Image (tube, rainbow, N blue to C red; front, side, top):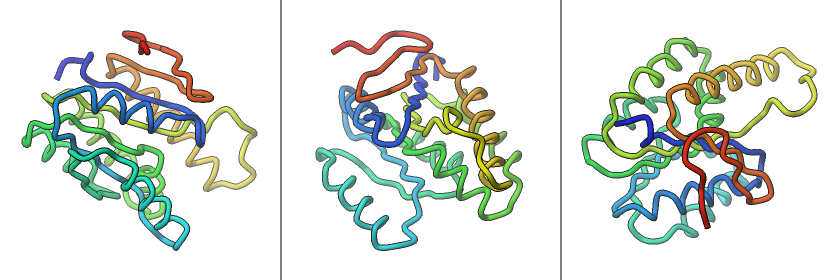
Length: 177
């Protein structure tokens, strides 16, 4: 994959980043692979996931992978389908809560990204724009997310920030339309 085939989309909650990502992927030939990193711990989350899934147009292959994101990306690459990962911050949360080696898992993701041949769009929540969290776990999450975003942004050919449904190009080719 060339760097131009990797896009990182950042934004706050309900900013429109997932809708933008889906639109960019579905502009490519189908089928498309949707790698969902969410874990459904409660009914409210199950309803969100159901709504998300039902709102997508036909042509998506959904892969639910909360932990082995590098492996899911390699499998999607082998299938040859454009990929949408939604989202990196949920994946990072899963890793932190599992209490494994988050640095090794992040390094594995960063190592696999440049090897992929298919277009990949990564969605993630920008969490560093608010107040300093009041507890250690939240500060660890914010710090790790910030570092992961910086590392992915260095690799990506395009980085977008979304606010109020409007994309701002931070790196690479602007989004038109």
